[in-house]
Image (cartoon, rainbow, N blue to C red; front, side):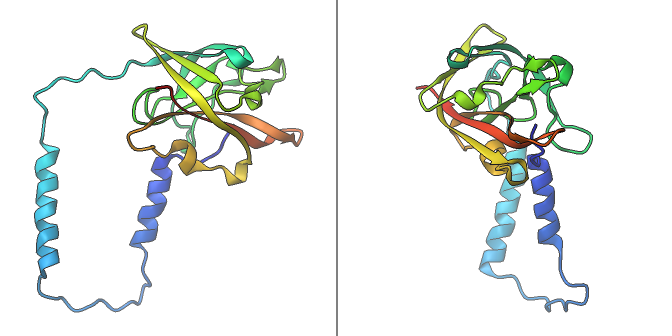
Length: 209
């Protein structure tokens, strides 16, 4: 499965990059506040006020995903909840449950704005696994995710790609797509070196309207 960095790891790297400066760098002399600095201070105060805002309206949370159906490739699987592995990477479904896919529960729920991610194994020592035929999906194929309240959300495949694991497109898979609900399906593929697959198969899908 993928070893792509989670968003939190990417954010940590960005913080480190922003915070770095040569040890002997000379600090600039203090300058009087400018109009832009005053505006920034006022904006920061606005952020603090916004943090305490609570809407008078009640909004129901999107129900949890419990099953995925992909008729084109014969997939019908319940969904395990996945988090992060001890090394900070995205957790993969346990091999003892290779026939079951998993939803990355630290990301968006299917149907919410952003990229919901579902992962599954391609095979195991016992044979083909839940996403064995994932590479066969093509543009226009349908994916249905059933939710805990009995509702469903449907997606349409946009494209399927294979990429080397060392070039895993973390931003494209895990980075939120603003207000557009999306779905990403991920498994292994490509050359097998005797221990691991060298690539990932990734399916990109958009919500069906």
